Length: 167
Image 1: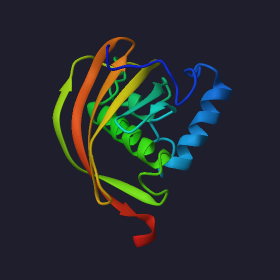
Image 2: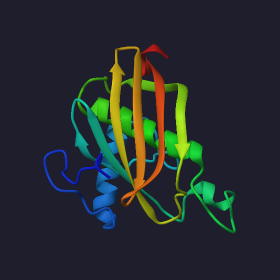
Image 3: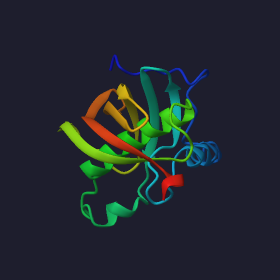
């Protein structure tokens, strides 16, 4: 997995298996994104620079969608994995002050999606996001979802950017 890194924003990876660390990191993500439980899928950002955002999330067995997708063999829905990548991309841009804190991101297109491995309850995913084009009104990014060293999902997407102030 040559795209991945183990370095943090300027430190080491935080241990998301520790409930207090995970809760503190999720509180930080809530400052960056308007999403809340049960639809916040980013636990922490490990790297965030001009070209790449690396974030992580643990899909616990308590996720709302596992009750129906599928009860006998729960897997994370593909659309949730795409949403998770988009959230990581948006959070990284807000954290770097590329986009303001009042920015809202709306998926406009999703392309080149490939699902290569299922993501199951209890698995931690690492998201590697690349900024392809960023402007005040539009973001184009690509991303990959890994479980350990294994590539699970990849996609490109475009988001239109609005502002909470415009509502």
